[in-house]
Length: 419
Ligand code: DSN
Image (cartoon, rainbow, N blue to C red; front, side):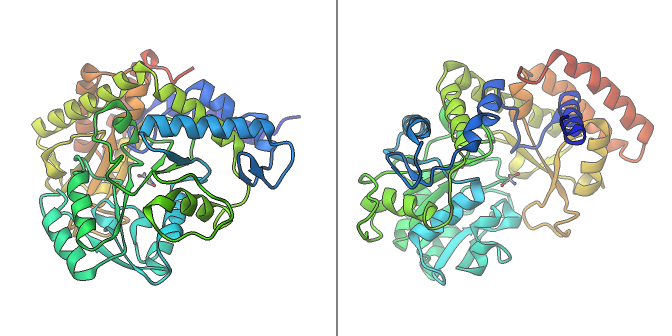
């Protein structure tokens, strides 16, 4: 007899996802092929090591799976080495620190409350505890302040600079970031987790050939299972010889940081699902999807600007919007709850220089990847902007929110989750 409790909850979650609008910008809906690979017997197999160099027998099939995943990642992101074993983004970033710097070394990343990730040097995260982390910020306008960043890099001389963000609606100037890293001889890491799907579709410039190491999770705009890719260039990874921290040795440094440095057996089912997602990302339809994500985000932004919303940086170039709700007299937490009651899932988020606390900040963050996967286009964004506005204007009116919820339930029938 199957576990009725968990399978019932899985059904309920599928219903929740399909009957609502998922607008958390780091979420998406994977294809049924990705899900099939993820739920496969590959999960049963141990395979510590790398293809051809394993500590377990019976790896001849999973070796092929991992090789295919690595090859597809290399081709898609134009690098000559890919590690596909990190369990997710935070362990991948941890491996990058292990590979490139020593505990106590100075590192630099975007402040968490300015859109950076936990692993970019937040004091309560391993990155801020094990390393001497200094943080850069955006300017008051919400844009990265490259000049201030350069000054900070010259003053602090970090050995590693993390770039990339979780709540930044604009394009990263990789070349400028490279120049800043070069001011102090720092390693430059590009965490493109949020935007990697847009890098593949050509809607965001690629850091390939500019950053020393690129990291992306695989489950955001890239639309794969949870997981991560660590990408770099250099000489082929060598398992045994001691190596110096040089650019040529990046593949070896990264691979060793993952295992034996940090992890044990790779998740082969996850690797297979990543390979399937990378196959899907190599198709022309993925480019269309990437272009549409951005078109949808811009349309949503314009609609909300017309309705008097204060968008951080005044708009978006990518898949997400960060809204400062101060002028609407509603907090991020109240907005998240009200939109949730309407069937629109977003997350409360700090805005740059937020005067409110992180658990009840002034903003919300929302994005279009999951809606785009369901086939929604600009005209649907017009309708959704109205629902967002109505929900926030009537955030204490449960009847009104319930009415919107039932309208959304009808609306999404034309936009099923991938089957
Ligand atoms: N928590 C992810 C996000 O939502 O952006 C980043 O890890």
